[in-house]
Image (cartoon, rainbow, N blue to C red; front, side):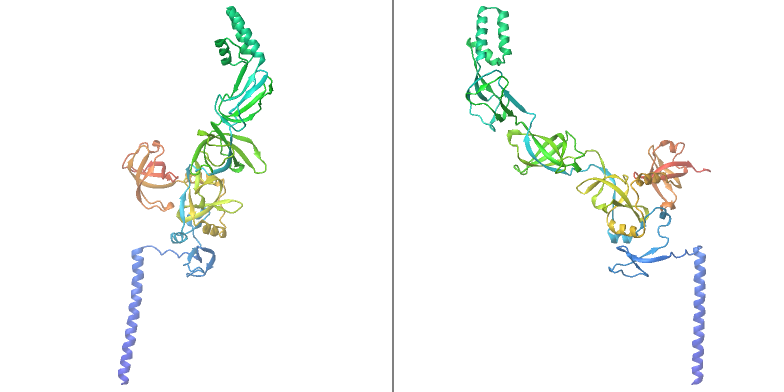
Length: 493
């Protein structure tokens, strides 16, 4: 029994020693195979500073797991950023970007829809006023029952005036006319004209041969009677005002526009108006004048708008809401939701290459609908974060990333234009404005080897080159697309 136990123990030990030797040999073979096939040393592991949740950037963890919000944490590496770290900013990987719901938009030019609205009231057109005066002294024999506020047509009678002076002059004219002396008759007729006698009255005297010293005063134009100072039995003097008539063909809409938004307004531009008296109806007019005085109590400017008044429906005192058209010049626009307003300044989050982001300070202008005008701080074609930018801005603040100043937009644009990426490729097709190249990888921007078309801004760049030539070329990446800036034929072809 003891011998059997000893034999079994010896066999077990031998088997274990054999397994250990086989494992060691397998490990050695695996190591050798790796060095033989790979031929490269395994890169050193990246150093992890801490683990964090992009939605709670201030919360750091020692290892992977869940954050206080139940989200999976991601590592923050010491060398995060690589070559792109030369540009200030923070990095967010693709999975975190998707979790944050980041949405990228492009800065572009467009026309900003009008957002200037104001209220106003209808008033008389003060440029369409007719003054009715007595041309000679006399007495009012009859009035025609008019009153201020009456709407009358052109030629409506107001009063009959007895002018004694006209009666004597007309009698002299008729006496001279009977003499047959044409020169004296013309002189006597001219005297009637100089006395202010209407041509119709003179013609009536010539036709009937009797004096007409009673003249009917009528309105020269149609409209509303604003003032009427004539009564039966009154004595009138030459030049005395009898009435004022205001035309109703057009009316003024005086709108009170806040001075802060009145800058883009110009005389002559079109506007739209809606009146409470005519719901659902929109009237079109134009700005006839912007009054020079500002109302100190309301800080508003009065914008005078001229509206057609067909049928006389628009009456002074009516209330209206005005939509004022903005400038028609193109503006640099971004989504309004992309703006980060701190109270002291306005920021926007730039979307850089390789998942990097950096805040930039901007100066905003008008805002309408979903768009805001950018006056300074951005260039056309730049990428910005339109959604989820507040969390990235918090991380940038904690990381000490400074916002790009307003003056840095132009500098960044010129720097990107000046930075050329070089590689070697073969010309597949060439035209006056483009060149198609099958090129080698471009490690600086992470491009693999591929065939693509580049813009050719100047045909002189490709002078002497043809399809099939192998060339070394430098290109940049403006907003319009990759553009070749220089290209030379590779020696030895």
